[in-house]
Structure formats: C-alpha cells, structure tokens
Length: 436
Image (cartoon, rainbow, N blue to C red; front, side, top):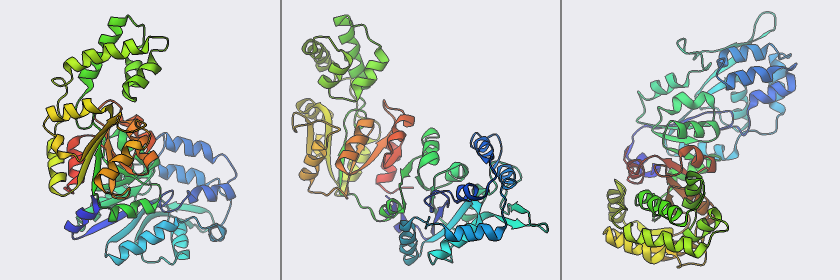
C-alpha cells in the first residue's frame, strides 16, 4: 500500500505525463483543430502504428499548421480550462508533504507552462519538447531530451526517469499514452489508464487504474481494514476439479457443445445459472445433478491452496485486517473446502450461494461481508480473479484488486478497469504488505 511504502522512503518523486493525464484533453489536437490546413490525421495514425517516431510526426504536422507562435499562445490562453482540477489539489497535497513532482511530456513546453501558470503553478520542473520560430517565422520543433539511439519519442522519458532514480528512492509514475510506455517500466508504483494500462497488462506489470488525480491522491491515504476474497481461482486452484466435472457432464449427457466457449461461460456464473445459459433445452436439474455428483467426489483432493496464499492470509490477520470470503459456490461446500484446507480460521465469515438473496455480481455478498467485518466501503477491498469480481466491486462501490493468473486473461480483465492488477499471488502479497 502506497501510504505505508512512503513511510519507509526518504526521497519519493511523482513523475507525471501531461497531455491526457494532467490535462483533460490533448492540447496538441486543440492546436491542430484550430490551425491545421488538414491531412495531419494520416501522420498521427502512422505514429500510433509505430511506423514513424514522434519527432518525424511533429515535423510533418507542424508543416500543416498556418500560424505564428504568438497566435498559438493567444489560442491556448482562450481555451476553456483543460487542467484536471483534481491535479491542482493533488499538487498542493504532495507539496505540503515534501514530495517532489516533475512533468515529462512529449508535447510542447510553451503550452504546458501557460496552462499551469493559469492555475497558479510555476515551480514544477518540466521536461518537454518545444516550438520556436526561425528567422522566416516558420514554426520549428526542438527536442532537447531526444534519445539519438531511439526515434520513438521526441522526449525520451526513460532517460529522464533513469536520471531521477539516482536521487530518488521511489518513482511514482502517472501516465496514459504511447510516449509513457518505456518509462513506465522503470516505475516502482505505476498509475495507468488508456493505452498505458493496456500496455501494462500486455507486459504483465502491476498497475493502479486512475480516472483522474482524485484516484491518485486516494492511494496516498488509503488504509485497508477489511479484505473480501473470492474463492475459486483466488484462494484455491479449482480449475482441474471444475473442468473434470464439466467434461464428465458433457460426456454423460452426450451434449454437443463448444467445450472451451461453454466452459468459459460457466466459470463466470453460479453453477445453475451457468448451466442454464450454456445448455439451453437440456434438463437443467439433471445436468446440475451429474456435475455435482462428480464434483463432490473429487473437489477436496483436487482443489489445492494457491501458492503464496497462506503467507498473505497470515500477514493480513497478524496486521489486524478482517477477512471474509464471497463466492458463487454453494455456501456449505465453500465452508467444507476451507475447513478441509485448514484455512477457515482466518475468516470472519464465508458467504456463498444460499446465504444472501443474489450471487455475484450483485452487491449482496459484499454488503454482508462488510457488515460481518464492521468495516466501510472506503477501507475494504475485494480480491478476485475474474470479470465477475470486477463487476461485483463496481456494483458494490469498493475497490477490486485482481490477480490475473487463473481463467480470465489480463487482456480481457483490463477492459473492465480494475482498481489494481497483479499477475501472481506473490505480487498481491507485496502490495498488501507494502514490500517493494
């Protein structure tokens, strides 16, 4: 947890992108919409595909702008305020606490300074490209922080972050786009959205999703008093037992289905709901009966605790954090399994199907768990592994920490914007124990 991590660090620093991160929209596009003669979209698309670097893209695009720098400045000054107001609050918050902040942008210095000055901010170091006028009045881009060995970006944010790491012991990186990808891999704590969030999932880097800087500030203050764990795929590795029982059901009833597609559909729902969705026209009671008979015979011996879970549970319990389980498994079955695995004693309650009116993704289980633990929505998180867990947390208005090492791949989970994403129980454990 960031609050606890920062207590251990002497010189943390926040490193933030500007366009689309501190600003609510890309200012370069505002300029193009006003002054371009057209045709810049093709250049921008080539840049987005990685066919050209931002230096070449900027040069080609500036050729299509018919304006003086003075006209650009006048236009920027007339824009409706594009700075995220929550950034201004965040900046004041970390300044009071003596935490450094710098801006790294592949945009242009002149408009970044203008827009920050409108908010009364004049003391943030800014590393960015810029635009000057030559003797003929032609707009010319300059790239003071370009990496000559790499032409991806005009401003090599990675080189700057490497330099910052010499004087700072924890890099908190906040960004959203293509120019942030390389530098984000050097971060100790990563806040990401849009393209950067997708990149983090593809490269299996833990991240925290943020909508605006209110989300970032929340992480500086968040303390966790209650954790609600999903069961299957989160606490225990249940895939083998479920899949074996599923295949047994198909073979016994001689069902003609797409096995992989149907299995994936079933994994996201309570058994009876899933069966009804994937076996329309089949005797539902019989299908459920066949599945359960097989599952009951094998599930205890075929469902191990996931590696690292015992350590996570022990740490949280020793730290005074309240724990519960919320599962779409039948409640008695879930309790029997946890007792068999000898981890039932960690939990204030195990809430399953039959304990509340509606299963996940309805909020009923979360509501019951919070009541059992005596916590609040602000200091409680849901830890899960699936799209259903993300939707459950959203419907319950609590944060969800997803460990993507089970059935749903990161590329699918990230589309639903979990608050935090991890790729192993060990990474989750490091987060919850504030180890870096």
